[in-house]
Length: 402
Image 1 (cartoon, rainbow, N blue to C red):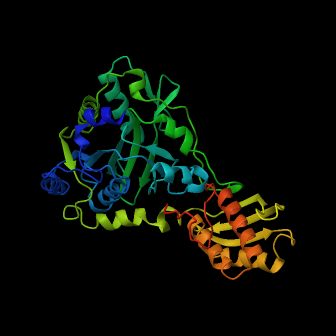
Image 2: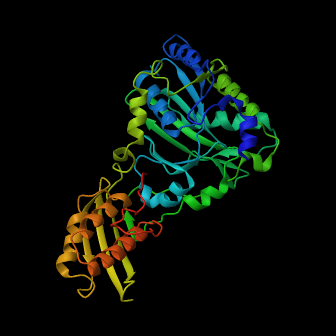
Image 3: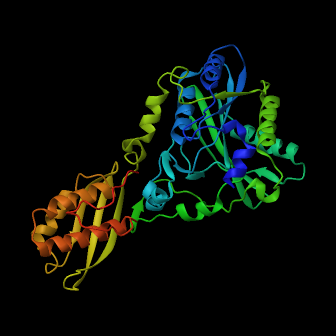
């Protein structure tokens, strides 16, 4: 599949982090100047497949381009990533441990809406306009009309929820948007040849007992355009969309390549990308939530078993309150309370939780150390982490970087 995509979409060829073409900087600078000239609008396509760079370019255009004077269509795609909406909970929406093991990136976008999966078989379109000219149905019409011109027999239709369905059954495009004081952008996906097996595995919460008022995603059956028409090429899809956008908005259909990593063309864009990569934005912007779940543990030395109740409240991605209801014959009440106090104030993150237990381990007897290890493993398992090998003392608890 990936070799097919690489052959069929040469516009995005290049190094893993972006485009290796030596003319990218020159082209990008030229295109950057287009953003401030008198043109009514233009079509851009990103040379990067980095999700943070592409999202940062969206933000840069909204913040720096006078969208009351011109319309812009940005075409882009990214390496495998799960992108959640601004007001969503990543622990609720996806399996973070599986994503990390599979090399799938997590990102939080500025717009609202639900969670989507990006990969090299998924085309993303971002329609920029003034706030006054904001019109999602008109944007979706560009896509549906382009597809119908490309394949007259294709049954595609936009819905009132601003999705596009194929044959009235399968979702091939979802939408989200952001409206500023004077500007707006509406971005949507278009499934050409995305890995559908990834959709069914990563979109499952692995965190047990999670309760949240964050915006939930609405699942729908999906399909790729390639499923109904294996002959559809990337180049003709791009051309059809650019031509239809040109006809609808009266702008040039020429596709202008841009490199979102070019700081000289887009001053400050690297800072925006760094913020999108940061824990504070990705996890810290999560609406408050709680976790209440039963933990089951076994002492490997005595075969003693224990069931405990874990209750935590999380605000801004940090454990605000923690309560452990443990039998006194498993851990002394004072030590159980100490565990709760140590966890409070820590990021709700396996790496930080494991590090907190490692500190406690150094001050306790061997019996208590073994049971602290089991308790740590049980809490991490409740968060969806795989069972960790080694001991806390050996610092072999796997670090989590997501």
